[in-house]
Length: 242
Ligand code: BTN
Image 1 (cartoon, rainbow, N blue to C red):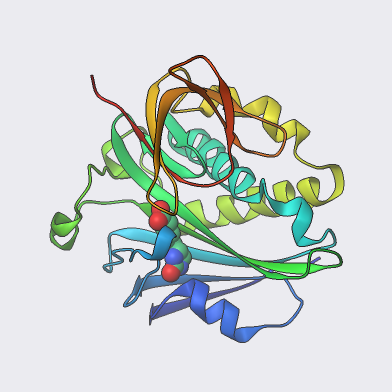
Image 2 (cartoon, rainbow, N blue to C red):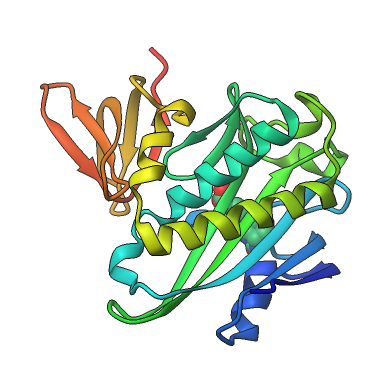
């Protein structure tokens, strides 16, 4: 079907706008800037004009919420593949869907789901990519990078169009055939593979071990220091520097 794409100036958050718009149809929103950009885990997302790509896609799934656990990895992997193809930069994914080049965060994805365990449901998929360095990015409190520093130059609108094409194909494929194809492609993009990591759970408890890829539900496989395997469904992962 047709995908309706709106391009706007400044909005609070493209995810918030699409969530408020509702409706069952696929649609996309690209903004020049956001005044209240949202990040994962309740954080904000710096979204100054002229610096980044701020894009959201509302998508309808036939499968219920129960099967959508790996969706955020499908999105992260598809975005990383598209960025590599467009720029040639060595983009990787830090589980579940942070986009990295070398040690710097290039972008992130925020997937918000609505619906029931069974039956159709709707996802708002938000993507933020740092494209250029701007003065207002100086306040970001983690190591970050911008696509403009790596590989071939890529324009924002061109990149948005490529991302929407790739995401529409990947989401339809995931809805119909599940996660297996994505699972097979994950290792070539896995920023954490065989690295020593620390996992911080929502309740603040911590685990350390070695990251050993993902499983068929998109969970991070952690090999703990005493040699046991744990499957991590959610949490904040950082690479340990020894
Ligand atoms: C992260 O915390 O890594 C995810 C950041 C996601 C930011 C994007 S920008 C477009 C969309 N609208 C939002 O408010 N957030 C996402």
